[in-house]
Length: 231
Image (cartoon, rainbow, N blue to C red; front, side, top):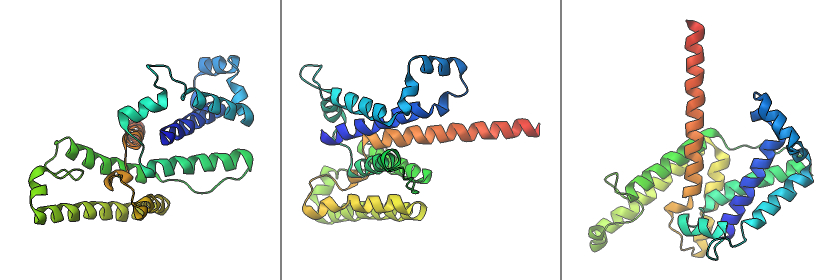
């Protein structure tokens, strides 16, 4: 549940950071006037931004439905976030803290291709787990568990998937690949989490899905603009 609360903290921090810049509202005069009248421009104050972030994060721990809070409901419905998801959020929070309080711009970014790879990796695992593709990397079936040779083959295929994922990730983004390797550290201390779910969870996969859709829309829009210019 602590990890879920940390994700909420990071999400609120990103939201108020986006509102403080108002870049995405620049084209809409009415929205810009509304935000200014609602004192959203005060979000440019670092103290005000973090006060709101901490306040809303604290409210997410207040029980409101049959003794459950937002963080508890997140954990109940979607389980704990993956280790890599927490590390990625931690990297974002660290960059934001350094920028706001130390006036230091960390010149490191997670490349877009990393989120595409994470989306594909999660899609393979989740579709297999839902029996929508022939092979399930996540859970061996009863027939596989009955034969030692098949169980060994299953474990080898799982390790091959993880190795291929890490290798592809290293090829497109060394920073994200390093975080993925760090995510494997808990298993050295006997962590009970499934090895495959170390890199992906519902929260991270949903973000990657939204990111892929957003980039796809931008690409289609760019292609349409080019075709109009040629015409």
